[in-house]
Amino acid sequence: MRNLLLKLSPFFLLLALFYHPVNAQNDSIKILSYNIWNGFDWGKDLDRKNKMTEWLKEVDADVIGFQELNDFTPEKLDAWAKEFGHEYSILLKEDGYPIGITSKQPIQLKTKMLGGLWHGMLHVKTYGIDFIVVHLSPHDWAFRRKEAEIISDYTQKSVLMEENSKLMVLGDFNSQSPFDVNYDAQNTFSLKRKQLSDSLRRAKNGPDAYQNLRFGSIDYSVISKFLSLPLIDVVQKKQADHNKKSFPTLVLGNNLSKSEFEKNQQRIDYILVSPNLENQLIHAEIINQGTPDILSDHYPVQATFKYIPGK
Image (tube, rainbow, N blue to C red; front, side, top):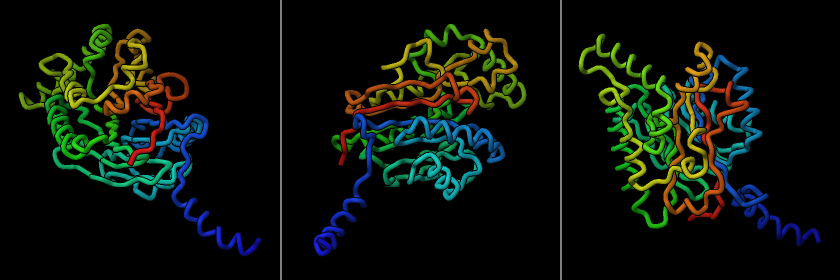
């Protein structure tokens, strides 16, 4: 018996190295995108970080794309990821407002892109799926348009040209969707605040000042560009129009009345996927109530898919 175990042990060792568990209950994969707000105040808000860690453990996502990992290093992200059950992580950069990704399975780095982008773009592969994490300009619609062109062009040539490739583009796009035009029309407080902010910038910096609005109106061209690749907006498929708000959360609403706060909310965070993942979509939502009210200024976006191993 001992000799048999010795002969089999290399086999089991190899099996352990190449086996990475997926959700055992229903063979699904859960994806999360989360802007965590200034890296927990550049690492100083340990209470908020601990609360988010506990919440992430409860959610038990398989892959998480993060934005605003301020003050993180690759080592810090790796250590934090292990706290909520992710053995693998990649950070785009260490300065400014970094983006990153964590996963329960090994991550293959494809591209780190900084040139021409406000915060950069991270392209990796895990679970047989290409993930592109983004965080577009928070200040200027024209700059976001250029970013959308750069990222879409890269995506088309580097991912979508490959037959049967599976793709998710996720993050904080700082852009509103043409699907939400009716919702946006009812939430006029946000529009008025942006109009005032833009006018103050113009008065201070002249005609070349950053402008969040396109000639005073919401610009829908950025998300339209990604949808035209084509990519599928998973929350649009699964969540009611009146509940698709991802920013701001209650932590930024303390100085507003309830009515003003509700009319200031908008959707600017997304998970967009290639059409061949649409039929695998089980559930998608912006988790905009409960504990996430106090964890960040953004709400997280979550999507669950049937897991079909990729190549």
